[in-house]
Length: 196
Image 1 (cartoon, rainbow, N blue to C red):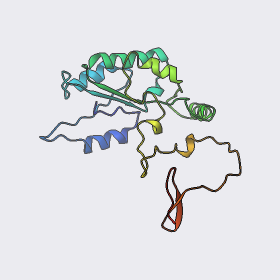
Image 2 (image 1 turned 90 degrees about the horizontal axis):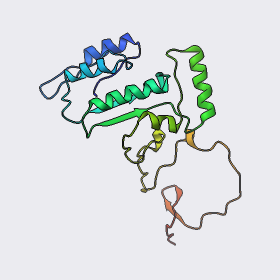
Image 3 (image 1 turned 60 degrees about the vertical axis):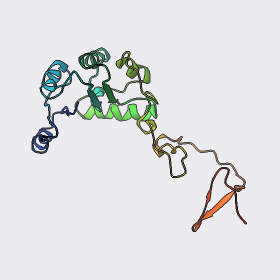
Image 4 (image 1 turned 30 degrees about the vertical axis):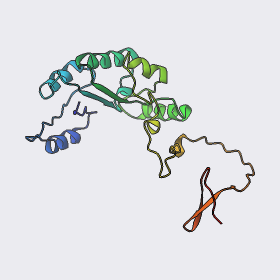
């Protein structure tokens, strides 16, 4: 849905009202609503969206504020049940797929000092939230692994530093056998041929 759900931030509402306007090419709207009331969201979305056509539901960085697993599942199910076949759901959620200890410590600190409270869910818990929806490739993965772009050489990108192992084993490596000189520094490529 092209609607943004607020998290108790009145300045966001003010900016939305000022910036989100409609034109002959299409309508834009903003819903000031609580995710725990999906029927209200759907009723207001129907005022601008055609629910006979596929709809995109974007739950980005919000479901982890619904602490109860069954309540979160129920909300997602009610939203999905309201949209036609061919619709899509995008979700981002605090998860413990990567660096679980560090994440749990950060969320614990947030919950001690911040509001609203949030939860971290495991892969299995997030998958259960989605019910029987078909996952697009590559499936339920951490954000940097969702369809990353290849580098200039066509190789898959390296994971961001935050996802790389933090321990290193130092070993002596022989110099690369094949080196291509491009500019002031050598670039080593697998399978590259050197010229003499």
